Image 1 (cartoon, rainbow over the protein chains, first blue to last red):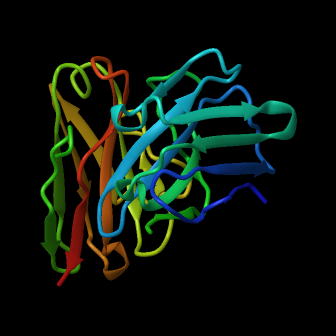
Image 2: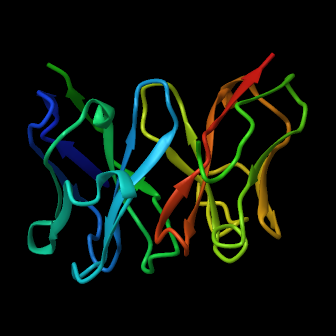
Amino acid sequence: EVQLVESGGGLVQPGGSLRLSCAASGLTFSPYWMNWVRQAPGRGLEWVANIKEDGSEKYYVDSVKGRFTISRDNAKNSLYLQMNSLRAEDTAVYYCARGGTTVTTLGMGVWGQGTTVTVSS
Amino acid sequence: QSVLTQPPSASGTPGQRVTISCSGSSSNIGINYVYWYQQFPGTAPKLLIYRNDQRPSGVPDRFSGSKSGTSASLAISGLRSEDEADYHCAAWDDSLSGVVFGGGTKLTVL
């Protein structure tokens, strides 16, 4: 079965850290870009970050620059999101999604089920 | 405020044709492909249209996408109750160097 499975979400205090993981099975990790997309409660989708096949290029939404780091391990078919200095506004369901083969061809034809991050004291 | 602009809601009766608009700019829709995603409550989004007007395997041909200039549209013909969902448009933005989404449109089948 083709799937992406996220893990690592949870409740964290403001200023804390979390590391999200996304494991791929039944699908090719390379040569695709990989994305993190989040959705705050009752809100629309917000793209967070993406990473090129070989990790040589990474892009972030302005609101997370300097706080979040995206990475991948192709040998393990895994994608990660290290989230530091978390804020209440980072509270959301975080999805990983397989992108296209170029940065502008979004693809995102395969999504995980999402993992919930709650930032609260 | 989303970079891409969608109406917050749309509605139609069974069998009708409805369209959902997505307005952008020269740095996103104007020069890059538009993608549409369908999302049911509590579930992950699903790719509905890619590269402006292409349907993935398994998506009914009742769904169609188009793009003109800096705007795009999703059309759903022969509306069915199971089409009631949220619809999101997205594109790469060259100026922002990132993916931009619309705010999403909640489609209600009356």
